Length: 90
View (tube, rainbow, N blue to C red):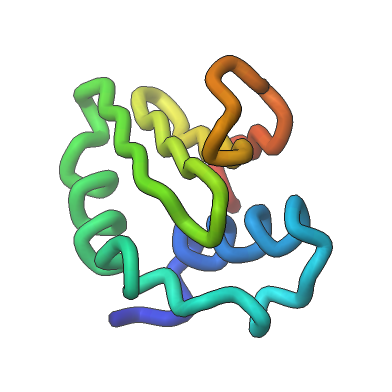
């Protein structure tokens, strides 16, 4: 696992921000999603639209990738919130 991957860091930081906690207080992301696989799939799908969803620390994480990568973090019970949207991590 590459703990310094941009997508991994963005997800953990966004969820921590939404929960109002330090990122170190969250469970490891690799317990629910393989960060290396996320990076690999997103890198290999640069020309195709892609959507990945999973639950993490009480939140639903959705990664949309087409021309840019968008990360959406919302409470697991939410269905249409646009809060917690982040553009492509640079």
